Image 1 (cartoon, one colour):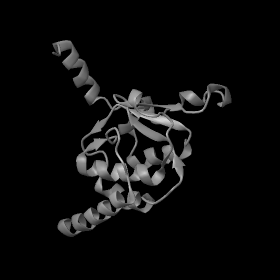
Image 2 (cartoon, one colour):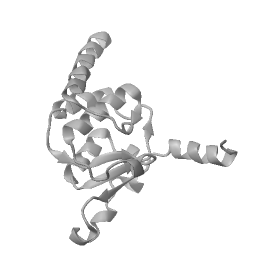
Image 3 (cartoon, helix red, strand yellow):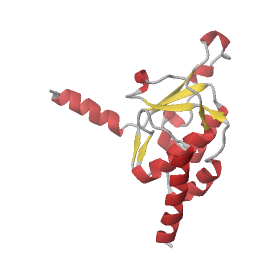
Image 4 (cartoon, one colour):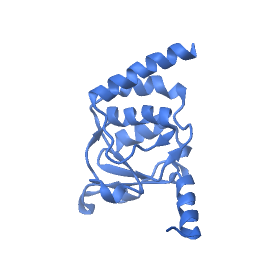
Length: 157
């Protein structure tokens, strides 16, 4: 049974959107200060737009970014065309894990710009980011996103 303090802490964490990025390479092989790099003022992912965040992930492929979570409409409709352009890009980038699940995942597991773009597109629909533990972004998932986008655009026109 959860106490009031525990519930309050969980609530505060769910409202937070702070992230941190750590290198997956051994500390001895890092350049000085590389492990402390966190994008955006105060490390708040909501201070960046999704395309800026993805650009950061592209520049830091040897890192794992831990995100507490973003709820609400962070990825906006105007971001989607560019995200769809990146959907099939196989370039390595930093992986993103949810802070509450990060001890249970392989930190430093390789990911691609296309996979992360897909998760950002998916978050437009779910209004939650990052993707849940064990989420996949297969070619079939990407095709389903493209079909959804076609239907969405027709409905909104």
